[in-house]
Length: 417
Ligand code: UD1
Image 1 (tube, rainbow, N blue to C red):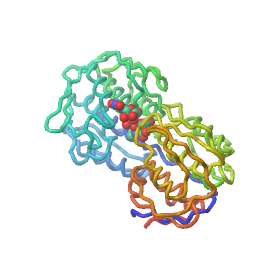
Image 2: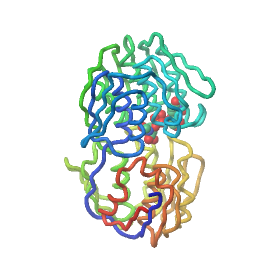
Image 3: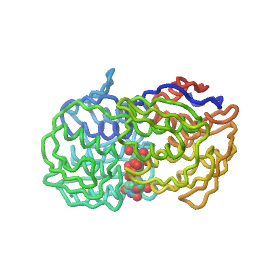
Image 4: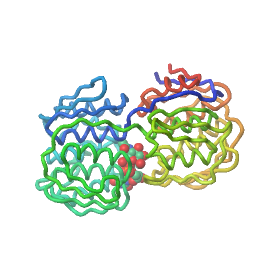
């Protein structure tokens, strides 16, 4: 199913239920191996990255099975801290097994996650922090080795609140002897979810949800049940899908308390967002207003993972919008295909673009080259006149459980082939 055919021009209307969070489920699944007992992780999305994490855990010797409501992991036995090369390549989030394996086994041997060497999308912050906790790192024949004979707590200040580095430090710290104080920790809700899972297993973590985490390590952790929160990025994607099509959508179970910055931007676009305990009701304007400036930032700022979707919505805005990407370079790859659809976008520099809204986009052949950018192109196709054919859809399915079905239920004319 690598093609999506879209007949654009339908305003979305109806209700969509938001799936569990991918970026919370992955580190929590990795963290189950810190317990030596059985954990049940509910509300995990059935997407490729989660299946991938399940097979990585199985390759380490854990007993993992899908159940109707979630994933059961028995971590009593583990072979050793060696991850199969092929399984790690292509999945950056396998990096969260680094902290977990150091915590459980004291050593790790793995391919550089995502197949990329230190340099681009580097892991220097992870390595520097874990070294302070007594972990030795070295490289042999392109493989990354880590070993800790005496894993201990440390006072660590991250130069930037990296999500992945915070998660790895937390996972190592709960198993380390002594106290770790981590300053400038990432405050993303997914980090909070990981900490809450570990706390439910018996870990002592203070400051959850803040930029300073104090972790008293060395306690035996036990298995528990935990429900993964809903995915704020998926909810935001459907919110901007409503905005770009002039739709009216109820985002059932959307984690609104984690979405303040996103809701604020949608409201600036002219969408009325009513937050209820059951979710967010969005009533968009027929054509969005342009937001003068959208700038990505670490949480609680506007998430980089929704930047492309906001950009897609702004191609139809009334007025001019500047978008500044502050977290990742290379996140404007959707500009060219959007231009082919008729969008007026000017690249100002590597980190910012100026979007002058146009009345219409036109359907065309599009190719998804990454997860969030691919979803943004799908949104643009929904609002375009005529037919679009989107390829490279496996990228999109890595993050969205049922995107075509969800959109069809909202009235979109979408077929996956
Ligand atoms: C996680 C999310 C991703 C999200 C991102 C930012 C998962 C699986 N992925 O990615 O969807 O877009 O947070 O919210 O949860 N950096 C370094 N050195 C490092 C680590 C990071 O320079 O050692 C840089 C990165 O290149 C990037 C920035 O820091 O420019 C943010 O990265 P980070 O917060 O670590 O993101 P991830 O954990 O990779």
